[in-house]
Amino acid sequence: MDLPDFLTNLPGIDVPFPSDVVRTSAIQSDKGLMVIFEILKDFDLPPHAHQGQWGTVLVGEMALTIGDETRTYTPGMSYNIPAGVVHSAKVKAGTKVIDIFEEPDRYALKVS
Image (cartoon, rainbow, N blue to C red; front, side, top):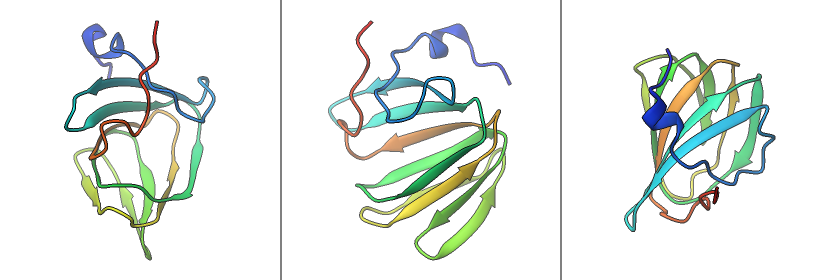
């Protein structure tokens, strides 16, 4: 699935991952942060926790561990990660997800 230019031309976010592994496009408001993550290479997201997060898989596949439960998510499947719950993921190259974070400042927008 190719995303339209108006989405891929949104500002990216500063994430602690190489740009040849993860590409981002984001919209930020005072109520939350929406990020499209495009995974360019197989990627392991280490365990971490933060405020609430909701997401859905657009394309591809990821094994997402939320708390003690691991499930494989494929296109059309959504997930909810409550605030403070430790989570991690193994994401396959080509996967695209939309994540919405409760924290508007979870990641800073990149300035072009």
